[in-house]
Length: 366
Ligand code: PMP
Image (cartoon, rainbow, N blue to C red; front, top):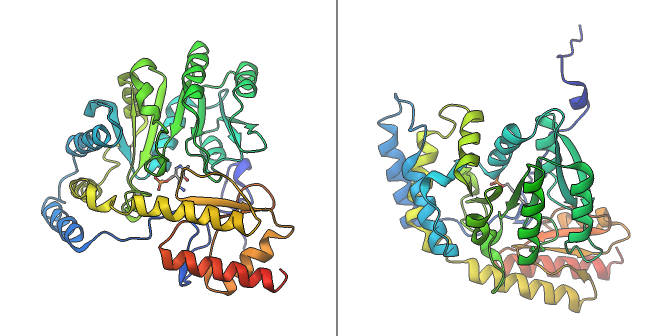
């Protein structure tokens, strides 16, 4: 007997999202930090989990005040912007933070907008919350086209604008003069602007964070994550900073106790080790810049990057190149516009393995 569950029409035949998880020596496909937490940090995390374990008969602090306080202190140091803990919110990865934003501000009859090529989860948040989805476009060089964006907002009057800075998969940061007018325009139509700063810590010197605009724009949300620069992807902790009314709205849609006592303990302990966890960011930025130079030197087209990954091309058959690298033990990501591939920045030896494999593929005429 074959039985089909009553899956929503729009979900039928859809594969779950996710990059291949393959056990290969060089993994440069999901923009992780290649350096694990050091022994001191791991021991402190273990101690915090042990302490939490003795309280696991109770539900955790639903408002996770200590963690929000820690995140607020971190933001003050990282970006020089003071955000009170009440205006910080967190969930299991910034993916969940953004789903909560769409649950609160999207929904049937409403529209979310972004600009392609961009992060492929955005249309999924929209789909899962029955929010309409409209993708505008970026310029040929992946830069942001404010005029086009203003026209698109005028046409669709979205309740949510989702914009990563730096953008995934291109690595492009938004110039400061873009965010403020977008916020003003979205505010006029009652919408929020979400600047997804998952990769913000990797931005080049002189590129400001949208956090600096929070005080002036009550409809601005800045999301961050501990998964990338913070080297804590496995802990699943993403967060946002926004005005009080936005945080209060999200508290309506969150599930009670959505952040486990273990997650809260791990993230708070990790925040105490921020300098060591973030200790490799400068090295990774330098490695990224070397990678860009090397690829350009080899004649590839390469997008400027403010993140910990590099988009390069253009290939007549990008899948063959991706497969060729995988055959040589190097896993990168087949994503972005046709003809382009994305490589995450790893350790110096991982990057050397990547460039050797790429050169070998080229020599073999792929
Ligand atoms: N935003 C962007 C632009 C991303 O690339 C990612 C991860 N690939 C996320 C958000 C989500 O990351 P996490 O859920 O691990 O915080």
